[in-house]
Length: 371
Image 1 (tube, helix red, strand yellow):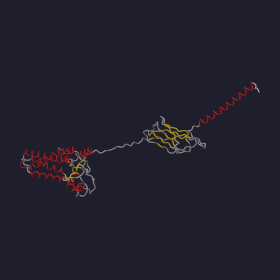
Image 2 (cartoon, helix red, strand yellow):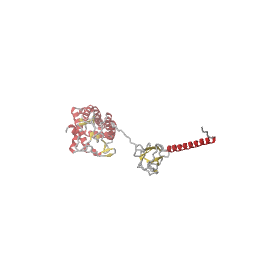
Image 3 (cartoon, rainbow, N blue to C red):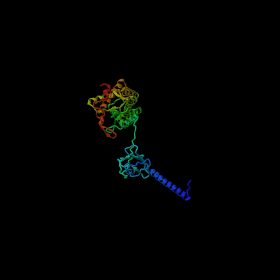
Image 4 (spheres, rainbow, N blue to C red):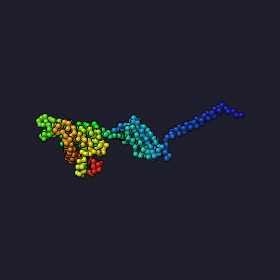
C-alpha cells in the first residue's frame, strides 16, 4: 500500500478543482452564446447581417396615430412580424432578413389601410420610411328609400294648387305627370274645396252672374235682388258640380277627377285624348273606365238646380239642357287644356311647357279602350 504525503495530496486536490472550474466556465460560455439566438430570429445562411425597418404613422394632417397595427410580411405567409405604434406613432422592426421583398400593411380604426411598396434590405441596412400617411376611411351608408303613396300624392296636389293660367286663373285639376299617384279621399275633397273658394273662382261666378243678368235668365228679375239671386244660384251650381263630380263621386267610385295632359303625339291623337277625357276617367287602380264621376256630377248639379231656380225655369228639359251645356263646356275645357292653357300655366312661379313624358304614339285612353 502506497501512502502519499500530506503535501502531495493537497496538490492533487487543488489541480482537480482547477480543471473543474475551467470546464464549468467553458460550458457557461457555450450556454450564453446559444441563448442569444432565439428561435424567432433567423440568421441568413450566407452570413449576411440582419437589417432594421422603422417609421412613423401619421394622418393627413401630420398628427401621429397611436395604436395603429403595423404588419411586415414577406412572400412566405409564415414570415410575418406585427407591432403596434406608440403614442408618437413610431414603429420599429429588428432582425429583418436582407434580400427579401417585404411589404408593410398598416391599419388603424377610422382610417383606410396603407400598404407600402416592396421593401428589400441589403445586408445590415437600417431603413427609415417616410411619407406614411393614413387617409380617413370612406364610409358607405345604405339608405333604403320607400315610396309612400300618400306623401307622394300630397306633394302632387301641393304642386297642382300652384298652377294658374297666366298666374291668375286656377288650373288645379290638371296633372302634367302621366304617372301621377292616385289621390286619397281627403285630397280629392281638399282639391275641390280649394277650387270652390278661390277668389278668382268667386270673381268668375260674379262675371257669369252679370252675363245672366244681362240675358235675364233665370227669371229672377232685374236689379240688385235679381243679381244677388243669380249670383247665389251660379255659386250653388259651381259648388255642387265641383264637390259632387270632383270629390264625392270620385271617392265613392275610386276615380281620378283630374285631366291628364298628353302633350305628345300627333294632333289627331291629342284631340282624341281631349275629347274622350270627359267620358273616360282613370281609376285609382290606374285603369281607364267610364267617367261616371264627371258625368254624374254634371247631372246631379243640374238636377239640384231644380230646387232653387224659379218655378218657371224648372223642368226635365231644363235639367238635361243644363247637363248637355256643362258636358259641352267640359269638352271645350279639355281641348283648351291640351292645346292652349298648358302653354300659359304658371307652376312654381314660372310658365313651363309640359315636357313630353310618353312616346309620341302613346295615347293611354285610346289604347285602353281599344280605339
